[in-house]
Amino acid sequence: MPFTQKYTFDVLVNEAERLVVSELERQLDEKKPDIICLCNDCVLDMAAYALNLVKPLYRVSLLGSLYTQRAMEWDTYSDSIRLAVTQSMEKISKNPSHD
Image (cartoon, rainbow, N blue to C red):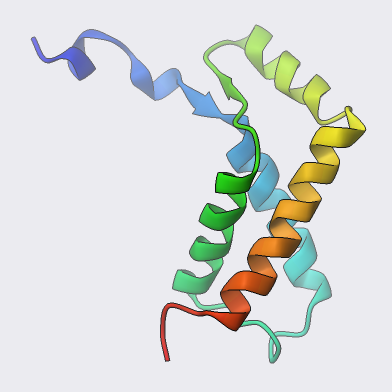
């Protein structure tokens, strides 16, 4: 049996992804679409770039989910999410992966 079929890796979730996507949506709603490209590639690039800047918050259980909710209460983590998203929007808007 292959390793990935032996274990249930689909329950392994990076909560930082949810938090980054939520913050990205919030910040994009505040920006003018003519300044930032909102095509699928650019928005996914922004999310990926931001996720590479923040500490991951993986969980596999409800208890882990509660831990990650507490992490967002820490000013430093929520600040790092906001800053990473801001930086990703600036970087990708200046260097889109298309013409």
